[in-house]
Image 1: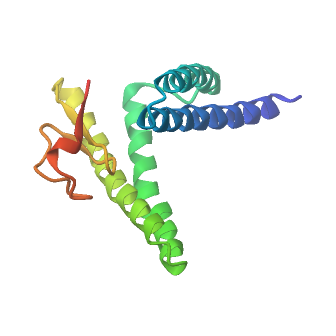
Image 2: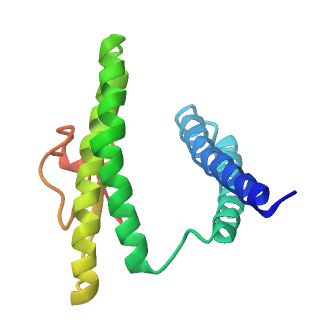
Length: 166
């Protein structure tokens, strides 16, 4: 096997492990809602294991750089997704009459554009050594720097839907 093939396999494995990690967290939430707390614990435990695998693969890929480089790469990624990828997803969903998918993609697109701005601001915060608090809307993924608004500017969810991130 060539080094290039191993690198491609690491990328594939990383994506698979990362997806499994999140999928299992979704399963855990559903199990909790249904009252299966032990099953939820199992899903969360295996999710944590999948996260370990994903981070090991990511480390071998040498994708994680300095914080400043990571902020710049994240800004570029969020911008690309919000300006190029989600608009096409929205167009297809609307053409197919899939309003739920269109709404989900629209919320994600709008939240991603705010994420890009946060990354840009974070570079300034690094220089200033400014500390801030972040809150995430649990409905659409909008992130606010500082106190959450009364209603989410992306999905109009009330303030109580924001979770502080420590």
